[in-house]
Length: 312
Image (cartoon, rainbow, N blue to C red; front, side, top):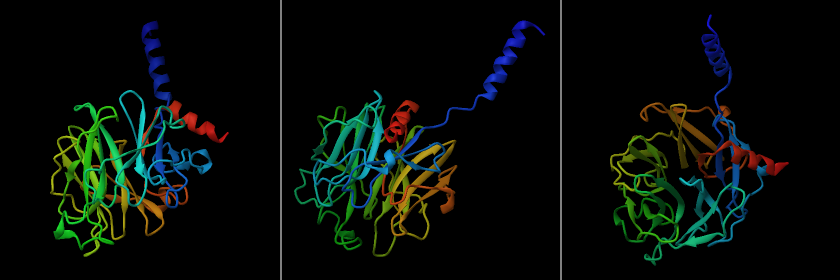
């Protein structure tokens, strides 16, 4: 055997023996009513999640109504992490802060996304996603504007009648005017948007109470900012109340995590084709106790190691 061939075989054997780099996954969440701030958990396989920082909050809320509910974090093309959250039950803005390492954060501020709608009751579960084609961020959330959709005003809880609204920004300093992003024809909350090749998927909750729905669906659009099809998928969750979806494609399979808030635990469904969904048994997906509505993201190993070092 020639020395060159022998060396090639040795390199191939070494590569085969080296395990593939594990994914560093982080999950945001809150506890209670969101009074104490941002909680993070991590996982290597997306199934077993462990609390970071001893399950103590990494950031206390100071903006808006001084709650930090529904925190969602996304990483920009320059490596900066941007976070938005619900600051109060009835405020007209979105909480915002940024970080390079998920440990040290910028000053928190309230983005007044619904100031042009003085009758707006709330801004709930904001999220953001970067569209590389448009080279800007889409920020979106659920709001109720009384009288805006009279055909469904009695279908929700406590007079809430949500639709999905949004605005865009390139620098988090100036923002496009807020607009109606999606009206599926029913009361809806907790939208989350992810890229799927050349299209974008939106997972959201049907918030209809009368008749009872409270399940998750998905729809799609050619761009992050829409327009999204009003032809939604059948429900992807079962006969229980689900909210706060977050989605990621891991190892070629879609996983949608969600808060089974009436059962006091998290759940997960998965699919290869977005058509047939499989429910994960409760014992196969483990989360820290008391975890509430958050989001999943992948981070560099160095960022995870920094977070792991906080508990030392």
